[in-house]
Image (cartoon, rainbow, N blue to C red; front, top):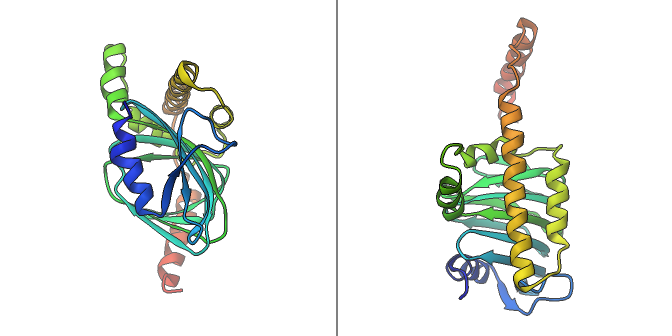
Length: 233
């Protein structure tokens, strides 16, 4: 039975944005589903492996011929991904999309809007974790030590120095197994990703805060004043 996240979210989302289902080509693992972008719009593929309604793995490997505006409703979930190549901006709140950083997205709060620049490959690998996993399964497994997983994931957003997570996502991207072996591999990597994030979050929360000096505060005020005076430019 196909996962609801595939049938109710990914399939309509991708078809609305000019992707069509195709058999998985050679560079992608056979355990997932693959879509190819309409050649009139761009070139490349979007690959997804979904496990029931617990988690999904996704690989982006495509580009658009013209600037493309994404405007979509992301369901309640937590995503962590690494872009190896991209050029664009998220629009609410605004931030530049940068290759090399680890990015997290907590879905279900507001519409996701982004501008993707033309002819620059969008190449990334990510893991999406659904509430059935982080609210139900983990809470039952660890009732005495449950943690706020969305907050933990947000704490590592735009991390430029997270080599353990980059290594994990590289292994996920290059795995080519199928069947039960693939199910076990991907589930283990999702669990490992959660462990890495929670460990980083707890180490970060234990660091003593350093108060700003008077010199730092004066410098920040200068920056604020400059932006206010030159905002129109």
